[in-house]
Length: 117
Image (cartoon, rainbow, N blue to C red; front, side):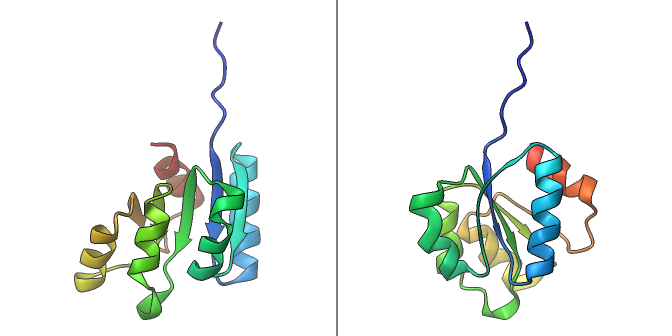
């Protein structure tokens, strides 16, 4: 008998409230359980122990992104980064241990496919 595997809980880290709502709705429709939401890296780290995500969706926060904090997140769960990274920023993200990166222009299906791998 085939049993559907339960998807791990996912934490959404996004500054914009409207985008958090969009991601939350998309992920719930796709069968993901939510394991917390945060508006920034510092808040996400504060929730890690309580929420215990199996995966973290992090929207790139530009030049102010603290890769030391990204590394701390990546040590607890795979981090999928949304945003366009080039040059030094891409290198720093890779060194921080992110699982993967998608551009902001990625559609819903691309995001879900990347998370399912």
